Image: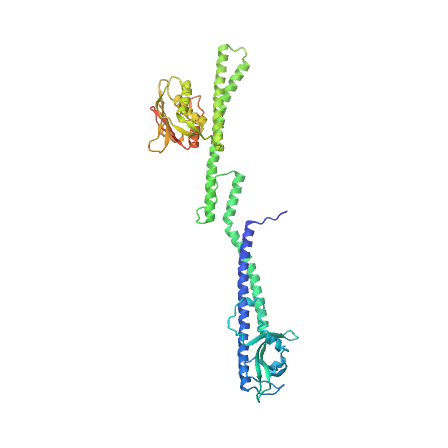
Length: 487
């Protein structure tokens, strides 16, 4: 079973890890600089004492013989020793007798031995320590006490005050300094651990607070999923930050989903109503024929004819619904070179068979080639012609035009103008809504499905064009489809 960390925990861990790393680097630098400064300061004191001891030796002011006490006049805490050429003890100060034995020749051959730990070595020396004339080293007593020493090499000089000496040493115990540095190291470690814990706790709290809008969004989405209430919105929208933008985007998405859902519900309701009417008529006529087998031939023929009409209407409605389903699914159309003038002539020939006394004529025709689906373009023209026929009384006139668009670039306009009943201004914005009926006079038409203009709009948009309607009640309607033209 795999362990899945929450986003809050991951953010807290990342924040805590970065903060701990920062604290660790800072603590190491503080410890290194602090430790190095103390040991470097001690080395400077030893170096000064060694130079002083060398001057006293050269001037012959160091009293005593071999094994005698040496009183060099150094700073408090510093002790002195004189060694012969073989590294044997010549003289020493009283406090130096407490120090460890030193292999002087070996120590003198090694210019520098650090007294601090490797971590302190990361820091540069804060005080200059000359390492050319002497050698620094560390010696340890049997009980573990460390001593720091500085050794200078001199020549075989003899005077009346001292014996021949080869090495001068200044040394001091490191017990107090080592104890102080050890306490400081433990303090730094404690502060680093406390800082790490506080960092993880702060990271958890900050992640919790920072993700609160995300939690609100999640809760709102869960509530919508459970209740189906698309009217709910996520709080916090409008804030000028990333989460505020996320909430605003989510609310806009909810508004779009709500509108789409309402449109779907409206469409399903209208489609059910439209399908119910022809099905009810067909079922009624079939039941009538089934019950009355001895029905007079005239009445039987009328029932069969009505059932046939409703069947054709139902077939057209189903075909339109399938076309809209293809549109909603985003299925692509063909992209061929199409002679639009030929398509319009074919649609005109089919439209004249549908006419019921209306006069259909072509007022203007320009040969134009467009790119698209010939079948869909023919369907577009037939829808416009069929609509004009349905709402134009017998004897009325329907005029077709196909011309280059003026002022719209390289486009062609397909115009269908009729002298029919027209459309009220308040109904014009809704003409491309599915199953919309402009007024009772138009809704009484038994052959319409209310889907023609929505399909025509979809076809025009799929070909990179648009469609719009101009109309006046009792004067007629003009429908214009504008499409991109190739030549």
